[in-house]
Image 1 (cartoon, rainbow, N blue to C red):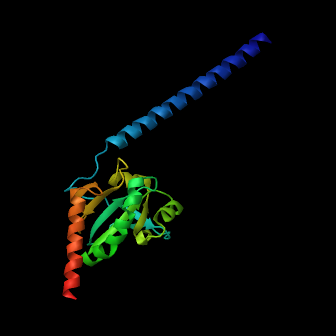
Image 2 (image 1 turned 90 degrees about the vertical axis):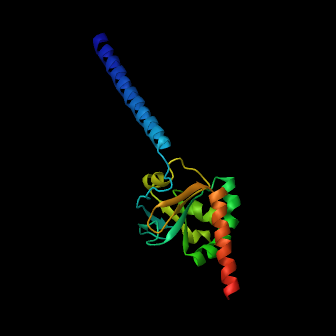
Image 3 (image 1 turned 45 degrees about the vertical axis):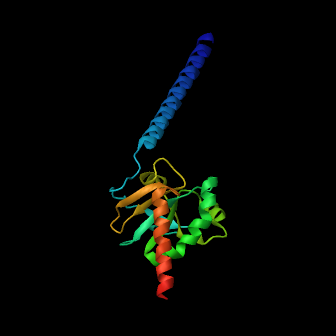
Length: 187
């Protein structure tokens, strides 16, 4: 009887040790994946943007994120980011100017649709929001930086990247304002 109890206890200990080893290896794999994704380089000027699929907030079908043959500004915003929230009025004001200049704006996100709708409520920005798969989002914004942008030309090549509000962003704002002024003068 004592021998059977001893064998049962040893079997339980062996199973506990195997389970502990399995969990430890899983944690190590996850840490390695996090380290690799954090060290992945963000796209830089001159890099080609990987073709990724996205879908709008109300769409079920996946479509290319970048419009074919058109320059695009990809915006990376987070509903949990106070700076992102403060930029929403500026981005909403840019929509018409960007359309007049032939520049597409896209908000790229991995957040759930309901959270994006709530975040963008009261602005026309929900129409340009696109949801991506996590692996595709990591190709474009591996450090999950927000508020950030990528300027992509009509060929799918990155022209500029950085944080919303930096010098390149201000240059875009000035160019778009200049386009709006020229159109008003022409009318």
